[in-house]
Amino acid sequence: MLYALRDEKGAIMAVSEKAITSDWKPVSLEDEALHAFLNNNPAIGNKVMQAADADFIRVLEDVIDLLIHKELIQFTELPGPVQTKLLNRRRYREELKNNKDTTQLLDNDDSLI
Image (cartoon, one colour):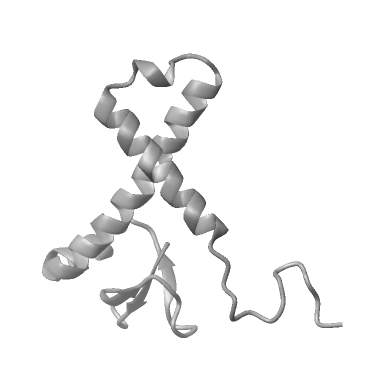
């Protein structure tokens, strides 16, 4: 999700992945003011598109996994390079999931008292 800082006329002056202050409001990717801002700031527009592409790739992975799970397609029916890419991404995601942050004193399920 993107957050935008708008001027008094409603034009977007800045965008962020987080609301920095209470003045930053969520903005839809379909918002015309966002399109105008991104057109005027192509470097930021490229970063937004890269983030959107990464999210879309994850959606495609989930759809492929669902189709395989429902046995509508078989993994081996996919072209070899696609199989390799999917396996590499699955392995990488598992590594990230298993990578524990040892600097935390409490686990996510632990309470203070």
